[in-house]
Amino acid sequence: MANTPSAKKAARKIERRTEVNKNRRSRVRTFLRKVEEAIASGDKEAAQTAFRAAEPELMRAVSKGVFHKNTASRKISRLSGRVKAVGAATA
Image 1 (tube, rainbow, N blue to C red):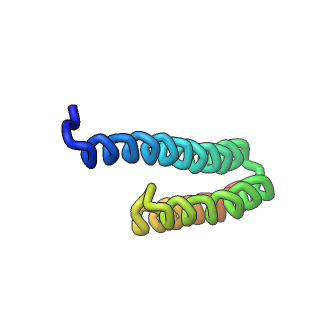
Image 2: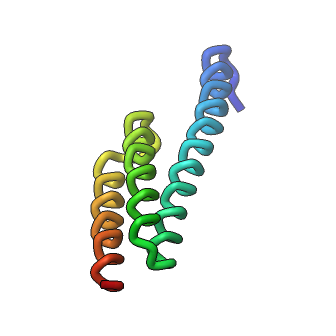
């Protein structure tokens, strides 16, 4: 347990920040899940719409420090390829 006043304050700040980051991470996962579901259903239009909504959400999480930039870029790149493949598979 923290003893000094500054350590106690740091512990409080970390607790608040953790809560905010949990919410941000959850929000991003929700957007990613919507893309995954649209891909699984084979609906290219829905997949593209969900992907366009998920991409800025992922990058916003990067700017807030929730995800590393390369992690988000990798996820976006892989999702983009899969969204493109939805149309090719059904066509």
